[in-house]
Length: 232
Image (cartoon, rainbow, N blue to C red; front, side, top):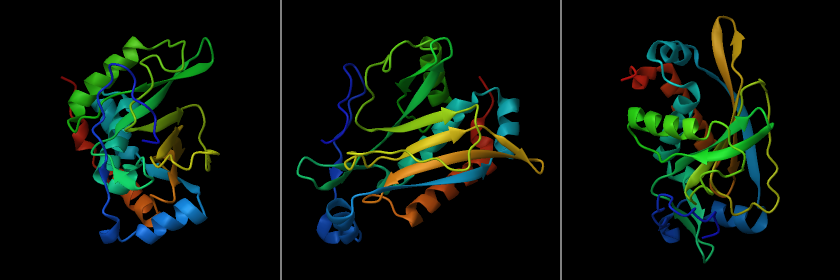
């Protein structure tokens, strides 16, 4: 695979399933954006997280972990966000993606990349990710767990800075088909709490329609945060 190799001891990534090109409606789009105009594109939105933030305070859950789970949940709903490039250059779909995320060391002013195995049960994922973050609360290396598995998508956070646009340059990253998310600092406006969120995607995998659908799903999750539940 033209993806990151999983670290030793990591959850073994199941092989991505090849796409049947003859039956795939996007086969021409794939070829065009792989061969003629390789490109990625990005968009930044403000999501209303007013109810989500209130529910978090009542639940005792960790904000970052809840955001990670929500992102992983909507990503795993849609095949176009789980795409990989096979050894022969053909498109394939990972059966599941896990979130890979950054954590900051304020003393060194550096960040590290962690990852947690996704679980559709939020309570189980919260406990798993919380334990990982506690273990690596002051990381000194870039990959304290080893590099994330190949079927991990990237999430980073700028909790000190609200932003209205963000773009990541990925020269040579034409085979990186998985989405990249960046979370910003909450914005208080008109009695609402807004979350800046940047999404970067590869156009061979994701069109504007797909991104809009995923972001709509995410907004719905934040608007109805009953899935947070109380701390055990």
